[in-house]
Length: 421
Length: 162
Image (cartoon, rainbow over all chains, first blue to last red; front, side, top):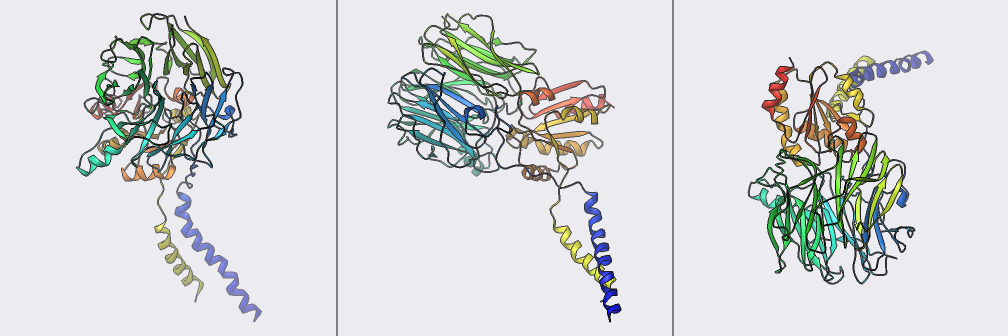
């Protein structure tokens, strides 16, 4: 008995082994299974890697704004959350971070995306940010506000009254007190598809709040077919009449910059082209412009282009309300990798900054104009770092200017630049 | 039942199940410091390296043209690198490549964020825009094309590399 029972048991391992070997052979010849990617995006700015504490030191992007009362506010994100801090002593000390988001969120972490922050005359603080709502890079913008000086923030709710993709939001306070929100919107894509047509890029869309962010006007489209992956610049030449600088898509293929200034009627005015760079390369540059308006009403525009006529970083000014612009002025050393121009206008000076990377070191270089953008100083380096960094952002309280720059190797840099005059 | 019969039955049963498993393609991870190795792997060959992204409308619209180009030029050393500003979702990338008949290309995926250092490592003048294509000659000389590629120009260039 024992002998008979033993012999089938001895053979099974062999049988199974043979079967598995025959099945397994093709599997072994194939490549090993691909690694799974994490679902939460890694940081896209400076704070990638191991630093995930809810602290400014671990920030991926940092966006500054001054409140009318002179307090400095920062909105920053880490890998999956948005926070706010503020400073009552011009950036020497900051409060403990207050979280805007609760629980991890899938932030839009593209290189031109960042949370927005604005503070109005009543001290109300507004924060907006975009999340990816699916695997096709469709976004949704959320808004939160604080009515108690930043101690607490409301649960974020969708900003827009439409479910098409929204990304690259901006929040700007109107000099006459309202809150102006603008973003890139893909509502035109579905509409075009229904007609059997394609829709290039995204729409520039906007909405207003005149009750401190409690409610917003129905969203409207200012212009269709703008570059869908680039931030925009917003400034107020006149109360109630914002100007938006953005990368447009001309004739379906040319991604040059344009300005739209709102008219007294409250409606967007005509589109005005900033320059003929002829960027016909149908590419997603993820690289948007920056706009400032000086007390004289002059527009100061800076942008990045890889056009056939010109390539690199450029500045131009408009003295006629954005209808025409000066011949673009090249910025920076063209032998280096130049990116992320930023512009600000103070009482007596206009400043421009950009990032210059030579393969090892990133520097922030600035130039200043004391005659409203007609002539400019030679470039001066004001900060440098090795390794990755966020965009250098210029910010002003109207009298003095500052550079805000998050870096991986050197943490958050807050650098007073002075008045410039 | 005799064990060998059972083995055959097992084999047939499991092989049926095996065919149901999803196909995978080789999708090599490319991170900081890895570009040099990729270049070395292709040293001495005329190579086209095309950067595309799931987050890039013009890139996705151009993928079918790349598949057609592979069909037209057997023997082409085409390297495709999925290069979203933030590392892409692996499975989505595989699906996109499969859907566009690009599984026979040498496919890579960037697994580090496309920051200053990584961009500079690949091409000093690449600002991260996609689509972006590098034409690497047999002698290592490199040209770049920003935006959609002119396939006739690409063809002519490859002919000079024969």
